Amino acid sequence: MSTVKLLLADDERIIRDGIRSHMDWERLGIELVGAAENGKEALDMLKSGPVDILLTDIHMPYMDGIQLCREARKLHPNIKIVVLSGYEEFEFAKQALEFAAMKYMLKPFTSRELEAVVLQAKQEVNGYRRAESTLQLTMKRLQESLPLLRENVLTRLVEGRMGEREARQRLESLEIGLSGDRFAVWIVEPEADPAPPAGAPPGGSGAGELHLLMLRDEIEAYMRNRKRALVFGGLNAGVVCIVEADGDDGSGRECGIEGGGAGAGDSLFDLADRLKAHVLDTLHLSVSIGLGGVKDGLEGVAESYREAAEALEYRFLIGDASVIPVDYINFTSEPGLTAVPDKHIERLTTAVRLGNKAGIRGELDAVFAAVRAHPGTPIGDIKLYMKEFLALSLRQLLQSGVRLKEMYGKEFDPYSAVDHYRTMDDMQRGIRTLFAELADFVRDKRGNKTRSVIRRAVEFIDAHYKIEDLSINRLSEELQMNTSYFSRLFKQETGCTFTEYLARTRVEKAKRLLRETTMRVSEITFEVGLKDPFYFSTLFKKVTGQNPTEYRERAE
Image (cartoon, rainbow, N blue to C red; front, side, top):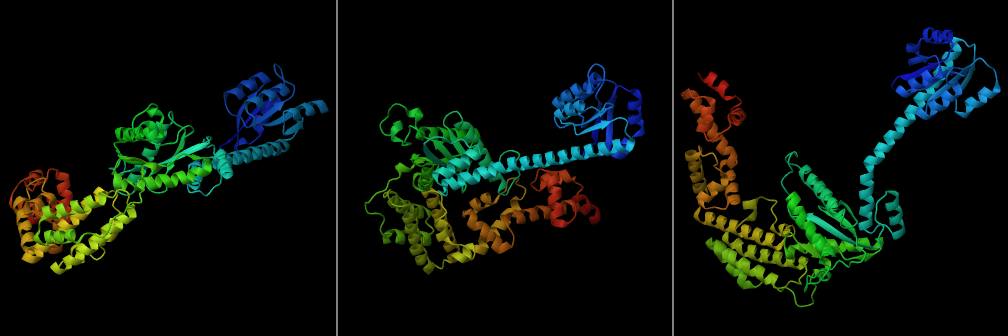
């Protein structure tokens, strides 16, 4: 703790000098900040800086000790006051008690008596400081935990784990402003994992979390002057808004979605749609928003949240970057999807065997068109339908020697992948890629071309390693192969990735130039297809264990 500061005020010089010079203040851990000869001078010293202990006489010119104590208490409410007096009168002691003097000492007194009183005052000062420090630490921890407490309460609210009365009490205790009678819940979810914000560390989940924080802050700022809303981190990968919705049922029909009408700017649907556009403009982030219905009371928040989550699932059918009210979901009793037509499976597997990628695309387009022709089909049924379609198609392809584990590894499961596509378009692209890769595999198996293709790839790298932007995409395009499939074949045959092989090739060429020429390292960098000498040196040392200069010196 910091030093305890003491101020002495006494009009008798002999008293001042005696206390100042005969007390070992340093040993006591006390700093004597001044010795005033009257109350007015002492008050000026009190105003100039903090004082922990005031040692003052009662009778002094210009301002007596009683008045000085009153002013000292105003300036420093926690100051410890010791009153000195040569008058043994109860009235003075009584007045001293009025301003909470801790001690009233009669003159004359010994150094030992004064030391005992001063040490007692110091102990009380340090006790107060410890208590204040503990209180500040507690308050700091409370402030730091408030966001977590707030999120916890709001999460329990949307999960339906609190009744109306408990919810009101907890929101009030945390000073969470949600005082309306009708509420709607929105769930705002980014469409894809965005690139890290500027300045964020690359990789890891931190970038995604930072983006969600930025999204939450942006939504809070946007809603602040438009609707009373509570915004907090979602239970999954989005942001939840609890919107006070008095006077609005949240439906798109009220805002003229079906036929126009006045008041469009006031509807919850339009507000959510403008929020979506605002997030795209400010954060360059596409989002979809699921809108739950307007409900009465805080107990209705959980039902609205469930509806918002259900609405957001229908992004699978509607597509990315959508605002989806729950009452837009088309529930229907008409017949849904039936068994997958055999003709599509036959045509698709034939196209795979022939390597006909246009035929693969055409058959899959027809299958997905049939699915989209039944918009009322539950999403779960659509996914089961596609799993059945995959199972029947892959079973037929087994006759062509297709082995998924040979292509993708033991852990590959095309059926579980169906459950993780975000939209119908994503699913269509993913399944199309799968069958295109199967077509490449069947073609290579039939012609035993794998080693031939990789040999051509290696020859291409050896001939074109000087090209700065040489990439696996360019090489697979040159060989007319699917990039991901070619990447797996290359590693399977060479034992390393394309990037590793290209790096080793460039280093081997550089080693020859270092041995046989006097070219500078910077010149060799460009000669082997790189443009950054520092990166080249780092790569060279990673492969050889030496930097280029060391290698040249040892080779001479």
